[in-house]
Image (cartoon, rainbow, N blue to C red):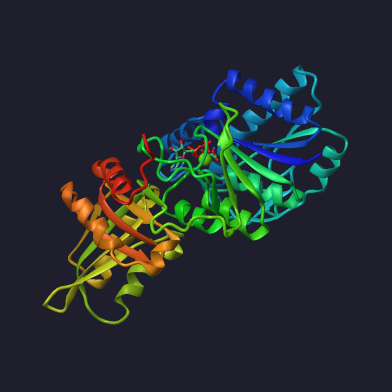
Length: 406
Ligand code: ADP
Ligand code: ASP
Ligand code: MG
């Protein structure tokens, strides 16, 4: 007998028929004498629709109320699945994040889990109940509803699995595993059978949204084995586990892309101490995470400073920087939302030269202009025009020898 946590994503619970399909899978696992805890996302598109509705009321809707609103998406699917299981004569019971003991900080919209009180769920599963938990949500110590950031039900699942000391956390989604590139844009992408937490952390941080990055961090910290697989087939997916000797360490193991960033440039900034701090401090105060930064020195003792931030915070960041520009007497603030970041990732890159030049040559051959570059020991990222994203991913995938054999 095992304790299995299963998480089903938005497309897996997109309508009642799919929820019934999920119920059948859960029932089958339970019938095989396992304890089952299910974590659900909202139906595909529902979170987006709720955000749109809120944005119709106000440009920046109240953050506390927005989380109360967004949490309803997951509340709906949890109730519907529990109802379906009960109709099939299974002892199921739904609960919201706070009922499941998911305690977070108060960063509405992007809350971090502080602790999980697992006793209630444990008591219920000891009595052979199937517990269905609304993912993506928790509450702060004051009882305010919070949400965990987009894609956050992956994190709910892994965190609950670690609190329950589950044998495995299964992430059911619309692809049958983790691939060397997003299989929806690169048809030659190869499925990876086993991947280390570290490698997956890299991929998630560079845009592979198949797992929310925080869920991978949790899995690594508490050593939770994660199995990413399809809810539409029986096929084995990808195991995300600790690194072991049997894993390949390719120079480049994956190509990722991220369309969720935007670029801001401040032109003709005075080149003197303290200016960069003035530009970035107010962004940090507003909770906006800056990713890449480049600075070009002009001959007249001025610089142009360009950086990337999440697209969702573009408007706020532009407003902040317009004020900063006035204060520091920069010439202009330019913004560009039509960008994407493509990256090649691989731990084997540490000991290899020539990866960067291969990447730049490959993009140059397709006439794709590189706007920004950033590197670390294990990845190289280029910012390009968004319209070239798919092409760039495909040609890089081929150039680094990752294409599957026909
Ligand atoms: P869910 O709603 O089930 O959480 P998501 O849309 O959040 O699903 O994540 C699954 C999607 O992740 C896939 O449909 C795929 O387009 C995308 N994806 C991006 N990179 C990868 C990758 N390297 N391997 C697999 N899927 C990827
Ligand atoms: N429903 C939330 C979202 O769309 C959480 C999730 O699906 O993981 O971001
Ligand atoms: Mg997801």
